Image (cartoon, helix red, strand yellow):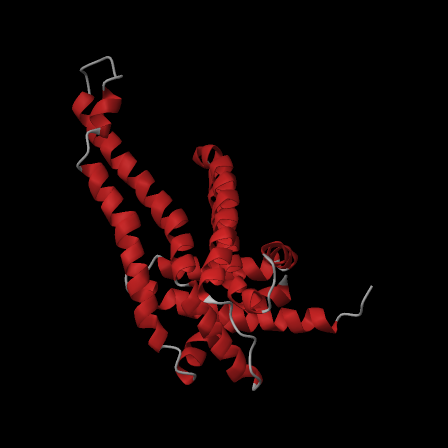
Length: 253
């Protein structure tokens, strides 16, 4: 655990310098614009539509009393908006951002590996097969993440111990975010989706520690959206190459 934390932290701290040293910062603009579009379409527009909808009025039709109706309607409006924002921002947006920026980040990963090793890196998959593979893996990760988050959600409102369930939910999200970033490298090494899942499970501590800064950076509006995809791709590539090399060095059992 300690070595996983040390390596993941070192890789994240080295990522900004590597980004500028190897000219990978140019990708930030396009990746950031893609992220911005996703955030607007998946977060801002649904929240705006919900505010201007009559959903709260429909739900309040089941409230049998007049007392407190106006205040409860306002509270329900706010609660619905918050739930939609949390779901779309913390869950859906990161998977969509990783999926649509996948070809760009795979290219970043390939160029970084070549620069770090001094050897040609494995070629990425062609565009359509790469997108199809990424979509299948993203759907697999998103569905499992959603099931775990829904399982934790009711317990997160319990006083005191609910904090633990919120933290567990954050770690779950960090794991799947990190797994998506690690796959930028695994895809180029022709890992199947099943092999990618097994690799991430075997190195789950490192995967979580790679994904956590990415989630925190995404929470920084605009600036974080521009830099988070590229930085996590760089940190994950450096980290994944280390584990691939270590796995290769292990004696056969």
